[in-house]
Image 1: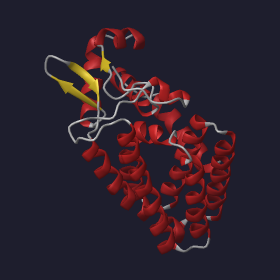
Image 2 (image 1 turned 90 degrees about the horizontal axis):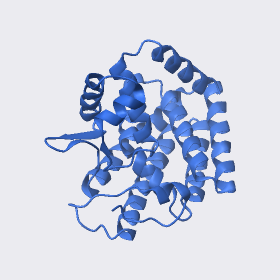
Image 3 (image 1 turned 45 degrees about the vertical axis):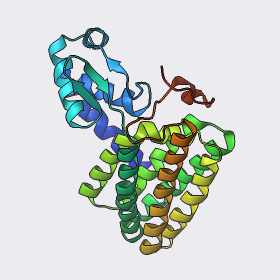
Length: 253
């Protein structure tokens, strides 16, 4: 797809000019956003330095960057820990995401090129195929790609970057939601309505439908919390290995 190819080329170009700390930060960021590093995981400087074949100084610089991005917490006497969100924080983030993604969809309805609309439809078809196959991980990747194409279609670079940044903050939790019963099937139906509105150049309807879609994810997040018996704002959502295999969730030890 044209949009995806363009973004991958930009990433490859950028990767040639990364400093040691940027390389570490990008690697850890990818691990966090894909769920390989779960919320609450403690990050060991020595192990990470060995993994990336660098000294501890670039690792510490990377930690500071990830802390400022809200992906990890730097705690005195406790080191670096992958950020965990409270129930209140997560719901608030989804509320803001709904508004940002809704605006992306509205602008995409007015501004998307024919090529971008074709890319969007292909990404939506990929989501449908992954959902039909019960492939949670591939669906999650295809879902991100579809939303990314809609961000791109807004032709508003500031809006795209802000929306992507917030999505990245909640991505580990969105991955958890993907494993909720019938969530993939529901998402594909919601995507179909949004894509159809964009294809019809009906920005207002696309805006409303996208907002509803993301708000439903917030409701699913609340369902996950309830299932895990996390009913207090002071508690956090664990992300466990069992989630990546589509099995029942276990509370992290």
